[in-house]
Image 1 (cartoon, rainbow, N blue to C red):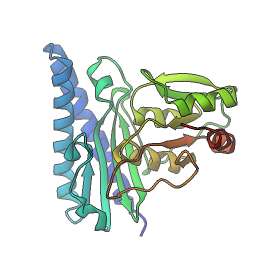
Image 2: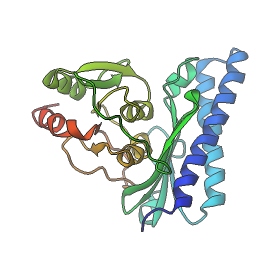
Image 3: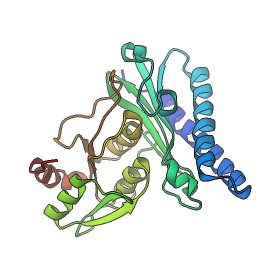
Image 4: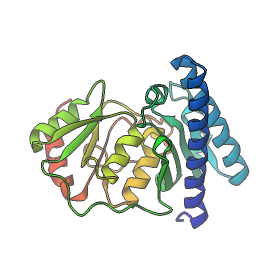
Length: 258
């Protein structure tokens, strides 16, 4: 069944609240000269605890998959796979950027999944005081930039993205977290986000829900559907782009070997 208006609003409210917590925590710990590693850990922990408490209270019958509840290996309680509804959250997407004050390219992800598909979601960009969500879907700008811009990681651009950039004559734009990258497509800062470097469901679920609601094309790199709440939450690749560029991007990716 579709998400209720209350589900959409809950996702937005929780992402916003966790974002406010992280902004305040970051300012306080940075003022105390807290080491980056501690700042990352505290941000992850406190945002995770807040989201778990709020979700348990608001939706006690739903399952939850959180990055911080799963650890770096992706292991978690797979009983959620048989649940009718599962919330998939990333309490702090982009811990590196969060620890590098005053960077703004980090996010909070909150999404609701039913029948393996996101039905509600929100991505907070707390340092920008912004929440994009399915509660009030954003509208894409009327036309894309020419040449198009492809957004990539600062440290190691995925080979798939550079392949598409070469095929389409696109420019590369660097940014941090997966949520910030996806929101950049919606916000008109780039036209294509193609990722091939390995991710988990919590990295893309909420961003994909928000992007799809805004009218973006969302898929795996081979054009197949992105499915969530799988027993193994590893979901290594995705394509998010403006709809008018999807055919060309997928054609370029079809010739990609990597």
